[in-house]
Length: 112
Length: 111
Image 1 (cartoon, each protein chain N blue to C red):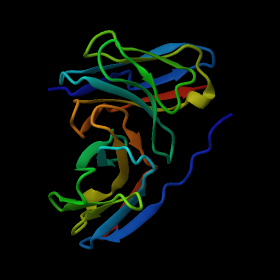
Image 2: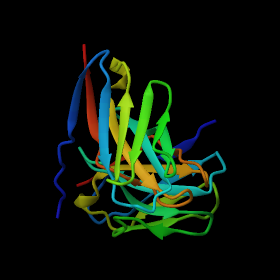
Image 3: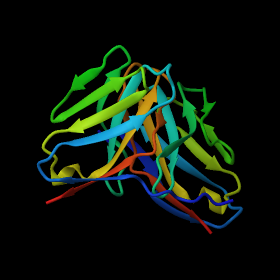
């Protein structure tokens, strides 16, 4: 049972480049999340998806887009990367009615 | 512009002592109040949760207390061990929606 899998684990982008962070969960959870974590800080919610085909903005959605094409996968896209988007990105999933969210190992993104 | 990272508050605890980690929350409508542990280089891991209709819940070596009057949540760790060294986050949210995380507390266990 892999849980939540994120790819890639590390990425360096130049300012203005685009990329998509992939996330997949094998626990049949309805809810999925994307967070960013900056050094010495907590997790800030970027986007959230309550179920397949639905997405909602979190605290810091600007500069990001998401896609929830099926129940397993929730991707995060940076259309034009900026240095301020240098961060560690975490994907998580949670079953409706459960408190426990399961997190991936994170993607360390550096924008130069 | 670039955001500036803030230093996490740090709780230094001697091995074997009890730890108390505090969290203030703002969303009165939350159903769940949750504690997560994050070890260096890893994603957060669930520790324990408490529902809004409770004020205390105990797990293995951990106790969570909820005071809705002052919007305060605490995590007590009994007999703190070196493996408890990590960053601890509180999170709140409804049973089906967004989970919001607090800023975190760094716990350092000293021998």
